Image (cartoon, rainbow, N blue to C red; front, side):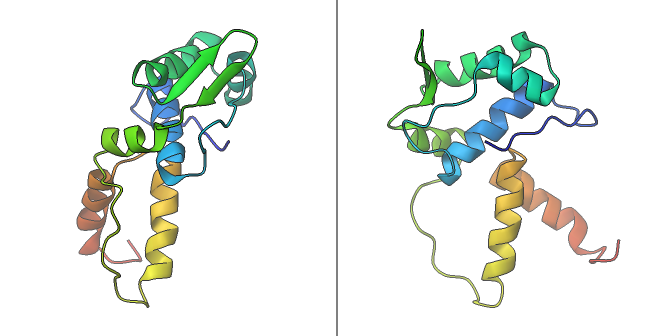
Length: 137
């Protein structure tokens, strides 16, 4: 599981973790039944307090994306992807294909956005803000 905490991000660390796990589930990178790292392991890997990691897991469990059981750990629920997509404001339906020349770049950008735990609206806002500046800004 690829999750990072950015100290420069204005979002609290638990929210960064929550959003990134949600995005990994929505993208299918974390499939139903996948076991997540133990809270202490995740906290140690990210350099955050165990309570921070626990809060992220607890909030995701509260919305039905994760399930925690003693001695079995935390895992992704069966309907987690649909729940994650709904929480991120994305529909699971397929969109019509875009220009083939843009598809690889779009997929790469989408992957980056999802790894950061951001929403479609946030990604589109970033593109709009930077469109006039161009690629060299």
